[in-house]
Amino acid sequence: MKGHRECVRAVNSKRPVNLDLATIKLPLPAYTSILHRITGVILFVGLAFMFWAFDASLESEQSFNAVKETLQEGAFAKFVLWGLLSALAYHVVAGIKHLFMDAGIGETLEGGQLGAKLTLVISVILIVLAGVWVW
Amino acid sequence: MLVVSVYRYNPEKDSAPYMQEFNIDTKGADVMVLDVLSMIKEQDNTFAYRRSCREGVCGSDGMNMNGKNGLACITPLSEVVTADKLVIRPLPGLPVIRDLVVDMSLFYKQYERIKPYLLNDTPAPAIERLQAPEDRDKLDGLYECILCACCSTACPSFWWNPDKFVGPSGLLQAYRFLIDSRDTQTRERLSELDDPFSVFRCRGIMNCVSVCPKGLNPTKAIGHIRDMLLRNAT
Image (tube, rainbow over all chains, first blue to last red; front, top):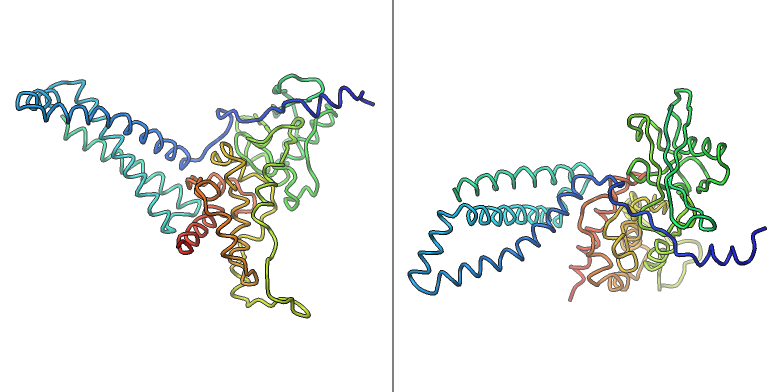
């Protein structure tokens, strides 16, 4: 027989929760969904820089040319621009996949896998094209 | 020799859970994971887990096996084991009472919330409420749910909001009553679900579909509920 004190401690103890994400296998659509969220955050933050550059370009003819030159010549600026375009491309493609699923297309296990793969393939193509366009 | 690493936690002794390894000799047989658990229990009788029917009907032994939720009794080793290693952890996201036994209160609360019974405000007939075969067919793929919680505890949306998001299992059941031709409270049921969390936290990643031991599709049911909510909107 356990003592009363042990029982009370067992019942009142703060119970642990098994939620160590490293131990849990997630299917591909889970990762594409996480990526959708991450690219959304990147776009949200990145838009501030784009607005800043847009605002700077509107100040005068000289500032417009300066911004233009930075985006055409600056390696780092180009890389940031490509990064933002990549995030946008992925976010749009994943969003369109959501629209298809809302219409009831790709709601089976196989359909979901295929949708996730298509999302990745199409956005990789768009990201490469964006790179070609920027450079 | 199979090396099985199991999640151990005894609230009376342990301040934190830990993993314990057992060497199990199945003599080459492709047994079910539940059989392995009983072999572990022979080595250490303080090991705790739930089981009842041992044939995938009762839904007691849902657990996380090598990273994927499922019923131990109908999961053969060949389906989950890689490189003679098996890691068994309790269903994710629910408080652990002891070892593999989790507290399912939150899960049941969401089930209770969707009123999992027929609501009909017309006078009860003398014998039974009749249903056309084609209306009965609409319940296929929904009524089979055994509430094992494999799906809801595989769902990140349920992990982060188990008190507000109904979860795949609860929503599958909600749809089962929403489309039952004998139920007259469709509109009321929908208005209970019409908020940003109950249904719309679903992001359609289909973890639920990939783990359901009964092969059911909560994602599709959730899609139907969303359609009904939109059509019902004023």
